[in-house]
Length: 385
Image (cartoon, rainbow, N blue to C red; front, side, top):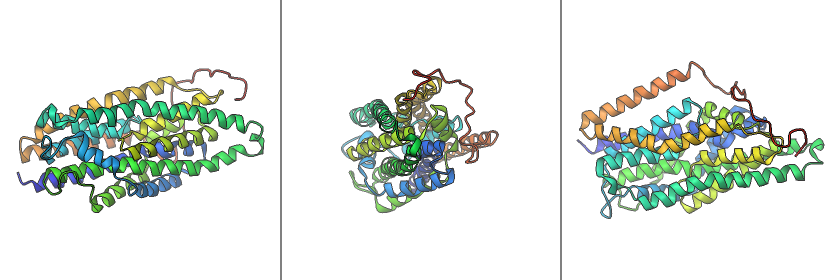
């Protein structure tokens, strides 16, 4: 098979994944601002799209974790082919679409790693994965980041209500609502510095595997631009289904909570990007929203919704790995297998989209809470925080 065909296929599917990452993770930045009325839905996604694009240019540490870290490549490791990377991306895209359909804020990061790991193991064996890097740069941050962000949000929310307890009647809520414009923008910028880089890393890994770049190369400028534009476009179109879950179904978010959750998320993501951790912004934001609910005495958290989200987090990496591995096995049969994987992935994606149109969620109904779960009576009900 001509090497150019799978390389081009990888670049196309990688940008599609980046696009789905944009609309899948828009909720990370803007859900609480939209839920509290701090920003109009369309304005929120426009701001988020622009800052995602800007964030893509600020750092490449996460991209290099992917292109020269988790999946071994080049003379120092096991060679992974563009065909295997293509198959892994198919697994990641399909998992993103499935969780988007159900409104579950699962991790696009873990979908990507799962798809790539499954494809690499099927095509090149267990030695194709650097399990130490996977543990230190992906698994451990995945376990700690929502706890850290949630803990910071608990403290920040409690402090916000205590400090402004006597000032709320004089416009403290309005002040926090304006502050959310800044804090939500910071999350969007942080999201661009982390998530856009993951697709940059995949494309760079492909170019290295095809001997079009030397081992250890940083993403070329055209890769940075194309990935930044893809995630920005996906963000602008808005992930309304997941935005409703994060903004309305986990807890009833008020402006001080939203400000605390967004600030906590932004700080956690920016530090992780600087350290090269391929963090799940979905997990960080969801953890911060839960923390903001616990930090306000009159708030309540819908633990059933949180449980479903946590289950999706646990299942994401192995589920994407399974699809990626199956796709790798078929794609390795030759050009016909590569085409078959692409066609099946396209048809599956179109089917999920068609199902979503039966119960559409748009900017007009994104703030409506249709959850059938009644929140538990909060601790301290009947008195202010």
